[in-house]
Amino acid sequence: MGDDGVVRRVEASGAGFWEPGSQILWRYRENAGETFHIARPVTVVRDDEDLLAVWLASNTECVKPVMADGGSVSAEPLESRYKKARDVRRGRWLGTGVLKLARPGEPWSVWLFWEPGWRFKNWYVNLEAPLARWDGGVDSEDHFLDICVYPDRSWDWRDEDEFAQAQQDGLMDARTAERVREAGRSAVETIRAWGSPFADGWQHWRPDPAWGVPSLPDDWDRTPAHLSS
Image 1 (cartoon, rainbow, N blue to C red):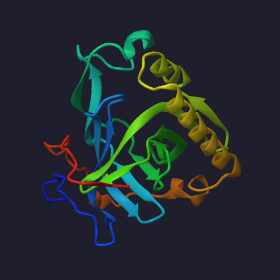
Image 2: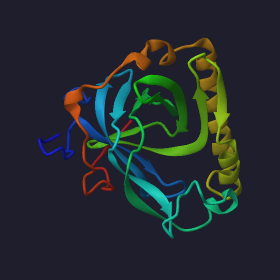
Image 3: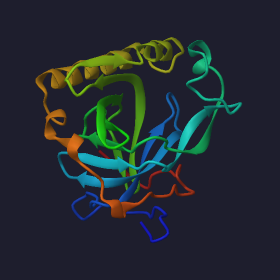
Image 4: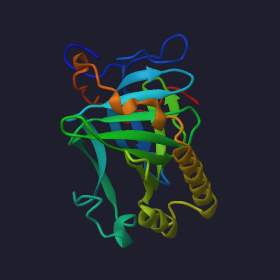
């Protein structure tokens, strides 16, 4: 990242990994489409053969989907949410920052949330396509269904209504939906066994104050020069 806070194109190291402190993009393609509708500049915390960990700082400028009339997607009634036209809009990541953890090839990432004052709130298992790496970041597709995990190790499913509606509206076929369900069951097994990353103490991690808040590049939706798993 330059002194002006703008995200620079950062190549992975010779070993194929980004150095801690590198600024990359974490993006999501639209469901049943090829264009990107979510893009978030993040700072690399750790990147190796076992884990990619990134920090999404509070007040980071991001791209998010909105309804074509500018309305919030979450405010749109569920029965029409995936049928009406959409657009994308730049906005700021509100609230506290988020730590995102993803293991290579795994069909979910785990996000850590804090309340103000660094009081740990919860882990959030975001079911999604395994991350595809490219020279400027990682890309995925969200799979609607999620799992919230609390400090007392209890958990619950989230967004089951959206998951069902997405199938009804043709954004996900039955075979894909079953793969997502299987991924969710596998994640639940990890939660019940209190495996990694839940047992790894990431809730005690803190970002380097020197990182600052990266800026969103103008070509946030560029086509990757190359992809690798």
